[in-house]
Length: 282
Image (cartoon, rainbow, N blue to C red; front, side, top):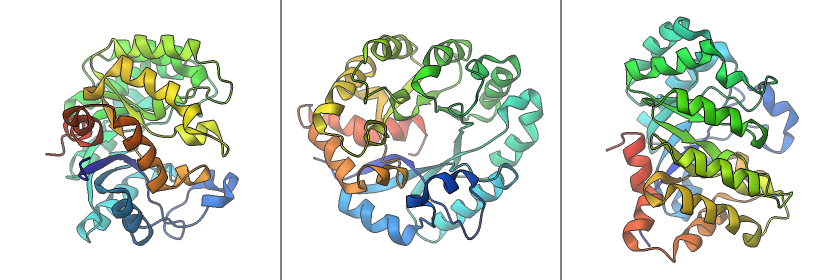
């Protein structure tokens, strides 16, 4: 099994530097999570490098977050790409923020969270779709982060933006705890039929809860592999959010064990090549 793994979904934050209001509701991870803690875990897991994904700091600090992470990379943190925040719901008015982000070399994509929006059709709003389509001007991708109840809307949204590379974070947060994956399986098949969309093997232990087992997760991984195939799947740790239910090395071990049945080239695709191609890391 190759050790050259790319983590497509890593967070870092410094609560002494930027403001992360959402962390107040999650006390176990409401503290700084910095390279000195992350890098030994990455080495233990066999992870060579990572893509940083925006951590939902205060919105007026979003560009500062990108500069801060770029500084960490310059100091030796093996970050090869950054997924930043931008106000895409502003439509064409998101352009000034995207102009600023485009000047930062490591920026590869944008994530504007959908999951916490009370309007189930938020991602279908005309202005939001216009903002997402703007990403093509900057050769940036979009990370789709939704809850299971928003999946059907996300299907319509992805279909309206066929020219924007997209990746589904956390497999769309399937309802693992309920055990009823029928609707999610249908939605995954529909999304995978759009060849501009990839998916991340991340966040599943958190969705399953602290008493998760591999048996809980295997059906989700089976669906992901069946629908997207190795060439459009990528490993992601979702550290440190994952620590609510697992550890970084444990999650990497779960994915590597699951992939052991695949060929070497298929394993390499999931563990590094898909992320490298999607985020243009080469």
